[in-house]
Image 1 (cartoon, rainbow, N blue to C red):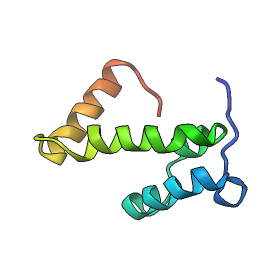
Image 2: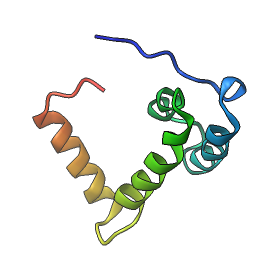
Image 3: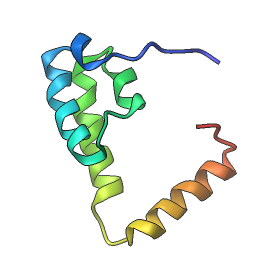
Image 4: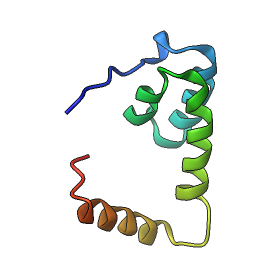
Length: 80
């Protein structure tokens, strides 16, 4: 499995840091998937916005949404 180094806040471009602030406000920390995306700073904000739309908005109850995520992960034998 390939390993992508994570871009910590102090090493992140200002563009990525702005998204880091919002991510941290929602999760208490910056998730590693966004730290990996920060190698291309312009990708962090759009992917974060998509995540918010798919996972934090909508009509599904949050518990049901998380259950769907877990089921899909299990079906795909995801390790993460």
